Image 1: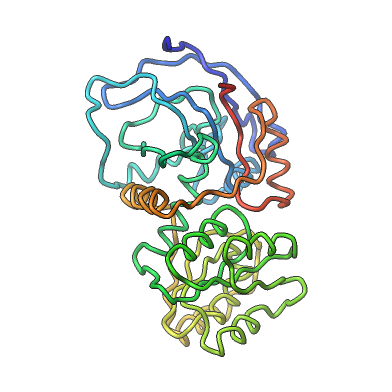
Image 2 (image 1 turned 60 degrees about the horizontal axis):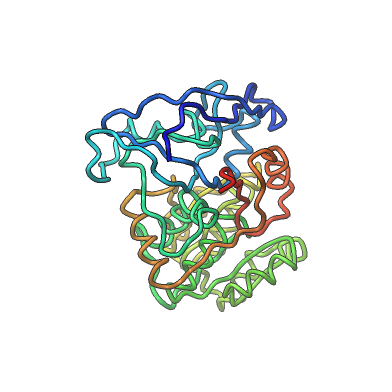
Length: 331
């Protein structure tokens, strides 16, 4: 197909909420020698996108940003020096978080460094593949990264959002027993269908950490996918076995009293590890796992590109299980 010269893209005119998202048109420059031009087919949304829309992202964001970080698409053009993909992580690369410090992927066409791309899994649609870059890689890094789980381990997964559902699926595929929490019995039914052996409704069981200990015979779990942040981390540590791992990923539960946190960490000798997505190598390893196991993402709902604000609204409502995706290309 001919290389386009313009693209439609969303910009956050002011960081005052997703009602400030505005569809605009921009010209497309020629890719540099190490860049590629990608036709964006689908973009999955993250909790991070909601935070950025409100101007509350703790890791920094630019003014008038094009939001979005996770895309799946096809390469239309490549720079003269593009021969392969791969590059070591540096501080400069860490500061290129799409949709925050730099413009993101809620656009029809996007120029990207060639090293930032990974081939999508075999047989996956663009909608399915768009769910992988943040949520799935984060879950993979947490469970199979520095401190990998082993078959027979027990994993506690908080909630049923994108990272948590991928964490559940990866844990089950790796031979672990999963305990899942949610405020919704309907969402917990989905978790059980995906392989969770035990489920806890934290609205009905506010002291859910004690229920985790009961389920594990007082031992505690080996790993926690901790997405709640200050509002849940103390309970997560109580739920963990001695020298277990608490993987800190998000802060969806809001504020909480952290005064007892140092004592809890020391008393259980837990490894508390912050997870900031993962490496390209981990992404490639994840794709290999997906291709081997047949794992498929849970896509809750797909919105048209023109209905982006409705997609944000649905994500904010927390009705979803798994991922919310925006279909950018019509074909």
